[in-house]
Image (cartoon, rainbow, N blue to C red):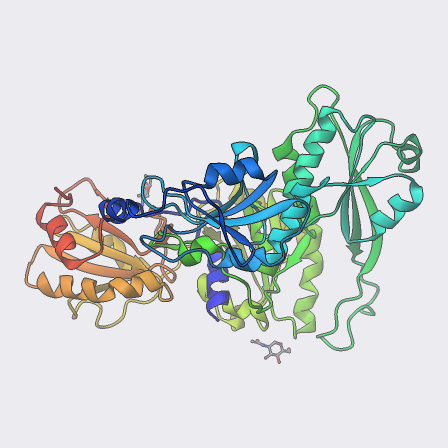
Length: 537
Ligand SMILES: *[C@@H]1O[C@H](CO)[C@@H](O)[C@H](O)[C@H]1NC(C)=O
Ligand SMILES: *[C@@H]1O[C@H](CO)[C@@H](O)[C@H](O)[C@H]1NC(C)=O
């Protein structure tokens, strides 16, 4: 359940946003302990993983062509590498070697993985489980794209997966081909092939350098009466498949651009309409979340597996159709939804959410219940604002013009708000909701200190007692209000919460000022901050 909640939150916060980080943890203490460290550059091995530190790091870099390093928390303030050892057991892929070590620079570094060859580290992208990392490493260790020699191998390659990418280049040593290889090394989830032979250019109808996507397209057969309706609502709809080749000619002047090519492939590797099917699987938590020195729950947390595709596509808007898939009537709505999707490819991702299935877990973040289906929502990913039609209309034309209106800024977002609890102001910590926030926080006679939290966030739970104590301490101060708001159930027009907990101080007086509190979360420091009028000495 925790995973589902985390996942659902990707619609609650800006997916493209930065993760916040806390720095500075006891830097002086570390310095002292550091003196005790061994200064030798000897490299020890544990479980097939080289154990690196600042004194043997350079040596390891010089001794191996490729070095995959997991930067752990430094041992002064956390544990050593763990996950790295799991990967290390699969050692032997290409000429890559795995190493775990800590690197001590300006306090503790967040956990990250990077490739340490030629001293220009590359961050590992994609799935952070063993398989994902091994695949990433394979792409780096050998050629990242398969060379297709003749029509038979090309045909077999194209047929091997639902989506493959083939680069046709007259000169595989040329610049465009190099960019293609780079992209292939990065996008480890998609198979990449390259072709140089004239025979292949001809077979695929090409005359100049071109990147081709081969995709098995699921095709809606069209409604003939209602004969396509599945016998049981749980049976998959009878899509038809066909192979489709999409050509992206390489501009002879501009060449290939890495970022552009990656985005192009990402956008086109998605189905026109995605279904939100978040299978509950044990997914390794990305390491930076588990063990980074940051004491903020990232918001949103990186999404796992199935919805990974939806959220990692970096498409700026998501159009969601919530429906009850057990209702054959509602199933029909998918057709016009799909018909509207084509015009917005790359700009708006269309997603179907089954309110009876895994989609049920997403509903609270939209303030909805299964009975609200069928309904539509548009989400602007940048700030997680949600938009809704005055009255749901499911025709392709209505969906299209609604999206246009939102994109043109003609529709106001709909903000979530819970109902204020009856006893919201009887306890020391005042409970705010979206509807009451404005009136309390911006009261010009009060200094208001607000904790924005998520119910599942462990860092929020850890500071809950301190917040209660603070409120208790100031409950008799007429001009001070200590408050909290569940930011997963309440949204504000002009304040977007990026991480939990976020603490904002709204000083008394005109001007609607807001000060973010970023220091230690304990009662004494909170008090000092309040006594000082919203700053720390
Ligand atoms: C979904 O549809 C089925 C079939 O019409 C119905 O029995 C069920 O109650 C519906 N569920 C909800 C939550 O409306
Ligand atoms: C949000 O900001 C806009 C533009 O600055 C302003 O017009 C609006 O009143 C603000 N709304 C709230 C609730 O503070």
